[in-house]
Image (cartoon, rainbow, N blue to C red; front, side):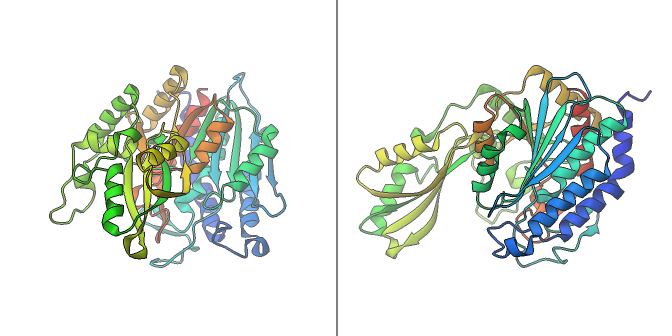
Length: 429
């Protein structure tokens, strides 16, 4: 017997390869490059054309209780806010995040980056997986609930226009127009990674980062200073930069290790290269432990530039102080830093709703709670703005989705499953 939520799934099935794919294809065709990469963005107004496309799409859905507007402050990229009133008695508010700006095209494309191309179940084009699907997925999920006459909570969708560049515009709009955002209970970011096609991946932690130069009389002296920060034999960073890994994160990493192939199985390895540690340790290293990289050498080795990834819960300002203490006799110049992100544990009710929605779509599987070895700066902004919110970060970007390189693509069947989980999740809040 069909479940009461079957009409939600049927609506998405019936409209995905027409309405959704058509909208995403148009998104790809508009070259809305981030202001950082398009010096003429104010003149060509491609970012604003993209915002209008999203608005037009939303209006065609005739969503009950929808108010949508694009904010356009002088000299800043657009910021779109769609607000949808609840159709249930739920007091929850869910805020979805995405962005409409794109990375530059670059070389190496097999197709025109602004010509949507469907091949082998994937839609190719710049902005397909980063991050064109976000808005269309979120608002279609709401429409699916309404078509099925199943109540949903208050939903707010924010789409920024400068995610790939300067964070200043996001800070401005979230500060000046915070009254339009409300106080969401749950923030869903649709701009992250996918590790397996058998389940959604929920990014629950992000490492921070720090870049700095150190100087000395010669290369040998400078490398001696580097070795104070990282043991060259073990490759472990100084323990002063480590944090205690929460037990529930260790449990999640162990489960992820049981579901994903090893690094040696996932990537081609050159002869002689060894993978240090078992799968679980490698995952913990990537998600929760600091790493140090030399990214530049100047002045015949008298100056070296270092990049450090920081554990999610290590404040980047504290990390700077640790560097200064370890290298107290050294000239150190800091070039940039950012604190990581560790999502609060989901409440029992939210976890139950997420697991039930996910199980219906992914045949009984649970979502994978993964970490990210890199950083996503805007999450620090959201956590500071909404400290009491619960966070669900997910997306469609697989390793071969090429989000920031040539031949960017999105796996459409996986994206449809993501949309279904979102819609079912909303229906249970």
